[in-house]
Length: 610
Image (cartoon, rainbow, N blue to C red):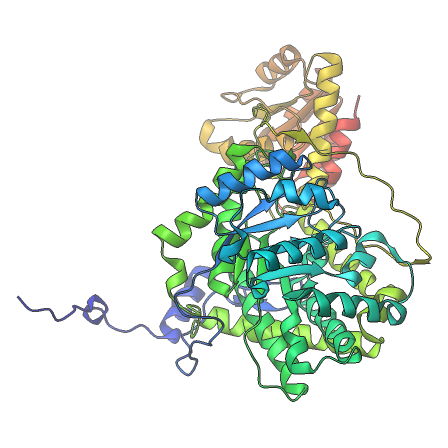
């Protein structure tokens, strides 16, 4: 038997870009090719097809075959419960810990207490001597805990080079909306802390920018500018640049955009290598800790968060993250229980142990989409870094509010796209489940505490999730249903046979139920009399006409008049009105729902109507 591998691809003739384009043009039927192109929030064009870049080779981002450290978040405010969870995670697949203290950027409403004795309890029974990878989310009051951890690790004989102590004073300023003094006054003490504690004392953290709605390039620019500020602070404290760069870790968000997410991590390494070259240093691998995005998570149908986190973890791992934290799927609801934590832990284990994703270094090398987008993100982010430098560095950009304004502009654009479902959120804005069951958490999210007044105020970056606007509508609908005992509904006025109305009827059902307004289906109606009678018995105050364009022309406006006569207080039409808008309105239609309309505005109106 021959052991010569068979290349099945050789059986088929090679296809060319020109052949593909000819087929595409045939499908487009005269429509511009640009309709197939996407666009990121950095105005980067995303093509439908990329060719292989044969000249590209894998970049040495980290040790080949090393995979990544599977971190377990330790954020329970009860030290004994946190200890139990940490030990369980380490015994069942986690290879490192992510210690999250109260008040940190990644605390998300919870976090470990900031007393030394609490840390002793949290780490009781943990084999510190083996040199566990540890990432710390350091709150403003937790520096003493970081020092205590360094003492415990030193006493155990552990190597502190596996630890990121997470000091991020500039990030804390942006989170709290102020500072006790300007950066020039604070930098020496911050550098002294990072210098004496060992390991990676500083962390350049992009999660706050991401959580506030930043684009990929904006997040990369903030991380790079932050690391630059810390590099300068260490140099000012007398630390040689060669040593100083090793005292800085990098932290970034990974979301469900697989291609841009993977390219973002690759771009971060290139950006920092450019900084090192500008400093006269030979670039060396940096340490990147990726955390799956809270911004992409939903409170509604939270099970979908498992899929989002899996894609995010995939992108982070293949993008070259050295350590990954996967948020449990109920993180947006409150303090996750053991089941949610186990799913998060096993997500990484399956990707590493069963899919073997950690065995290839830089697997995206040579892939046209990843290489092109990595280059584009580098170009966009570097331009933003230069803007920040002209503003006096990251502190200058934060103090002036320029950076916050830039991110807010992107967030507003993102919010518009979400409201119009151009950025769909599965289970929330698309395919909602009004009757979904409650998911348990150990504790609900606490009320947000007002920020302490600081001597130097500056605009804060506020963490927010993409789904919040739709969730607020669902909350309003649920509260009304609880108070009245009846959930608001819209009557689907399906005209004609099933084949005529199904597409628009399903569209309308998903549309209204995204705001908690029930839209029960029916078999359709053949005339105005049966339509009006069914509406009367439905108990609904709202109606939505659904059918095909020919039936709209035939008797759609008659149906609208019949619904008005039957008592409908507000009538929607599924579809664009076109030139007949005035006629539809004269017949009694008050609003139109279609792909690309402002869903949030329409649903807000539907919930306000009596």
